[in-house]
Amino acid sequence: MVTNLLHPPMTDSHASPLICRTMNAMKLRNFAPPRNHSRINTSRFGERPLWFRPVTIIRVAEHNSGSGLVELETLAQKKRELYQAVEGINRGIFGMPSAKKSEIESLVQQLESLNPTPYPTQELHMVAGCWRLVYSTISILGSKRTKLGLRDFISLDEFFQTIDISKSKAVNMIKFSARGLSLLSGQLSIEASYKIASTTRVDISFENSTITPDQLMNVFRKNYDLLLSIFNPEGWLEITYVDDSMRIGRDDKSNIFVLEKFDDSENS
Image (cartoon, rainbow, N blue to C red):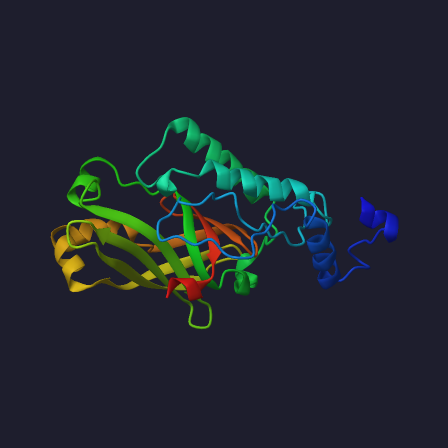
């Protein structure tokens, strides 16, 4: 690479993490998609190309062959491919063809094998902040979707998760809009606490939930337990991939979650 022509090769024993991160960020500019400095933001998921993301890569330690750097362009490309694969499927919540699901899960596994943060619970600052759901294997199908009115009457909008590492708390916010109630919008908020269980896993305990405004609660009241059973995060979560812009996790119910870092000032 050009870097090797300008500088003698550096080994991990001679290069500090800060230098490695800086060098990698400089090299990545040749591979990441063009940035649009004016952020494109919409109120509904999927109305802009998901592949149109600044791709952030940090220093990656190879798991099986000692220290070193994986090819940065490979990791950046896999992230772009994953964003393209999940485009237009509404996060997978209402089902998808089996071939599409297999494609997405293959890309997830490839990214997990390149995880730049192998011990995420030792670097919790990497998971702190606001995240937006991009893909999940949680599904709302058949009679469940009908009972919750999620076919014609109610729309499932954005799903956000905010993690406060200073309090070991997480808040999931699932946004809805009801077209028959003068475009009423609201959200289900679920608060949970977590405890570190291993270098990659956290145990999650449900604390409370609320639906606002009251008009939306009235819509869901009859099937509130069903709604909560779908989105209740209690159990454990394995953090299988995290970098500055993407996080992947797997839970004790065999669900996969892919989230992107989100500027929470835009979610106010």
